[in-house]
Image (cartoon, rainbow, N blue to C red):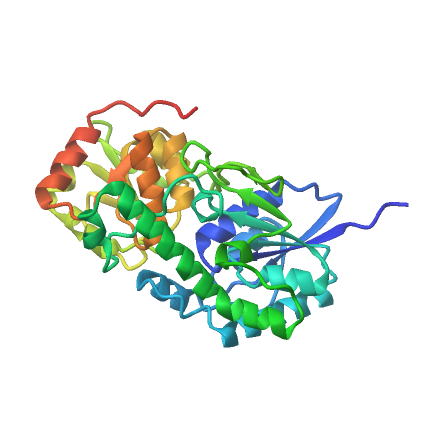
Length: 374
């Protein structure tokens, strides 16, 4: 008699990058042993269903509001009312669907929901968001304290940043612990610990985001890079052989307005392939525009990528050995960009003048591919 399949419920945050890397992880499970379902998303169900997975409905956070808060360095979205609403919804879903395992990717209440439901909780995490990150999470460039920190000695600035961050994470944890008390769950020290699962999978390369004293509940699994179906479309026929190709990919959170200058006829000396510019900010004839595209195929032909510094995007660039000029939309992407700079894979383009853009694009479009990552 065949043994009963274990049921896994995925709870990705409602951004494309999180859904895609959860899909990559889901595909690694033996379908003879596991039945997998995904949290329903009006935006991304098409990707989930194309991979053959069912979806389920559940209370969740408003991703647009969360991203606005993130941009403003606010944690207003982690208020007790919304936390409890999502928590109760998750518990109901886990119990109704009789889940054995829940997997979260930026799902702050999922640890509590798993504890209340008695199921195993697996957490997908970026290396810079663990309690064991070996580097300092620096003050973002847009933060009001950034200029002050730049004037201080490096070691002193890092010490102040670490102390301030520790206090902030404990403050953010307060509404979680209020709910933990209400539902008879043990208190947790801070927000980073609240995000932890029974097992924590770090979706990064250790050379970019080194860790120290990792406990057994943590392990590196490397980047989960989603590959779009191979594109046999006519865009490849539009690439002119004697023009360097520039790939532009700003993900679902990037600010395309910062790249409007690429419409200038000057950039007609390049073939620019832009993926995801749904507002059509880039409209010039020398720009090939697609909502979705097989990034690996584009990067095979590219000399340079201009991107937002998102996790999946940077690893596609690294693996394709294409240098990246990056414009971050929020502080987590700044952490990615700092890691690229430390390892020579790319650099921040924040504050670039017109001359800076022209010089950097020209320089990198005349270089060979980067070295293969170790």
